[in-house]
Length: 304
Image 1 (cartoon, one colour):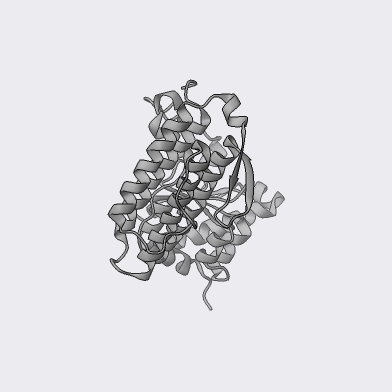
Image 2 (image 1 turned 90 degrees about the vertical axis):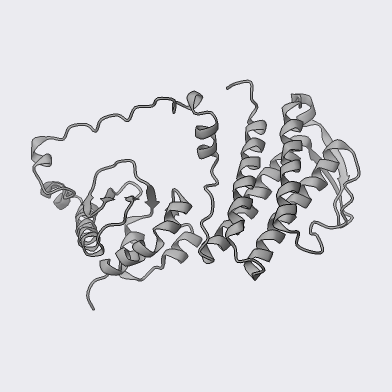
């Protein structure tokens, strides 16, 4: 594992993320405005990659701007991006440390002078591409298209499974609970703890409302976990709702206040995601569960 540099891993991840994003873009309606914007967005990242490839290799890049006059077809873009990504994976694999630190003078497409190290240029391309894939992923959500999972952790634990403790990994058994806790209704914190800790009382209230909502909604079809940032866990498996901290198909991370606001209809899930108040572990699963989760939140709302 150690012979592969971090930069090489980042560019391998970039190549895979681009492949998966372009494959998912086939889900856009052909000829739709959303499809054209998505094609132009990823095309822009490809153009910028090729411009900086020219700077890095000391060869003319041939672009007068960071965007093409017309959006390419999906097939053309797939081929262009794949070839460019392969070039960068090979390029970073053969770089020595002194080369990474070397400063390069260049000219931006608007004519302004620039100077960056090779490492800075390469890291710019990683962050630039990630940002624009995120934009396209959001457009997919708006169009009902499932975006791919675009995470470095997911890539590393898939591409290097054995080296990342994923080869034949065994899930540890849950620790046993004291008799007085195990004998309570699942999900309810001890009464003494609730009295001493107001957030525990709020957690119990939210858990009960979530339990009623899950029963009314008939389950979600996936396991769901709400991570309340140190104030507790709400775990949903079918119609069973507990406060166990177990692996789930989808983890939603939010404060207990924001979860309450979501349940009361005072905060929309879309606004919460856009402002970072709600984080999702797997956007693809979230999209698949969107309608069922809307029902869940609607049934959590107190009666008028």
